[in-house]
Amino acid sequence: MEGGEEDVRMGAHRYGEGQAIGTAAPTLRESKDYEEPPPAPLFEMAELSSWSFFRAGIAEFVATFLFLYVTVLTVMGVERSSNKCATVGPQGIAWAFGGMIFALVYSTAGISGGHINPAVTFGLLLARKLSLVRAVWYILMQCMGAACGALVVKSFQKSQFETLGGAANTVSSGYSRGVALGAEILGTFFLVYTVFSATDAKRMVRDSHVPVLAPLPIGFAVFVVHLATIPITGTGINPARSFGAALVYDRAQAWDDHWIFWVGPFTGAALAAMYHQLVIRAVFVKSNFFRSKYIV
Image 1 (cartoon, rainbow, N blue to C red):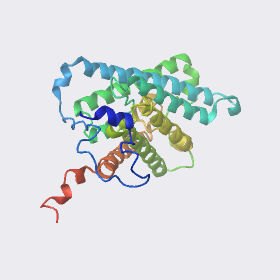
Image 2: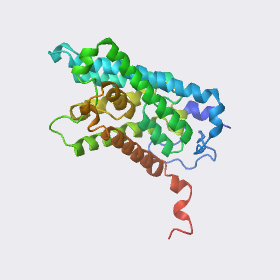
Image 3: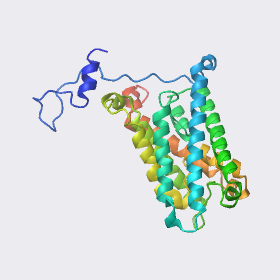
Image 4: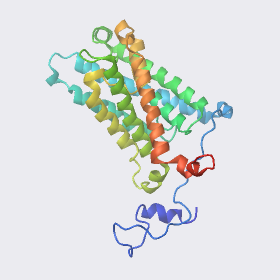
């Protein structure tokens, strides 16, 4: 792309020194310094014959496995201690979840996109960033990886795992199901909105000199949402994380309100996808939708 290297190097400072700070540029170049990827087809059966398709699913499995292994162990360590001051506490749990997402997104982004969360996959599917075939494959592997990660933790400390709740997400006493659902929707909205913003094609080009920029805000979003909602639901915002812990723990209390940890994250992801595509990226405006002769 002509002029692309210069635009990447200059980033946002693409206009000369003669332009005063805070004033609009008189003209814009005809060509953009980034290229928007085309929408993914809904059904792409050819992917099933590609090794990269299966490799990406395996990467999602391994990443979600490691995510549950470290985070569930962290939760168990806090829950088993009678003196919370002797453990990392809720803040440490939040750091474990956020830090693992940061590390795993950075490690797997080049292979699978580093979703590690069915809600993220669902939001990107709605935005036509991947096909339905790949989305279903990712969600399946994420749930399997989460279950295996929780199972390994249970094999390490079976009695504590069963008596302490297995880090399964539940609605805490004093909160209604409506409050829990709202917390999951808003928490996931924030996370998926951050994912869209951090991986935006324009930003990825202009901030390419900072290679860890995208995983950092995503991990930090997970961290702050956990700080806010651990007292309410233990923080789901990831159906695979909730499903894996509930499946291995397998008690009635883990399944009673389990629907909240699917409906909430998927609703939040859908709202984030709509907000980013329709408002932030203004896909209707760019496609001249509102200038159509059918719109009066």
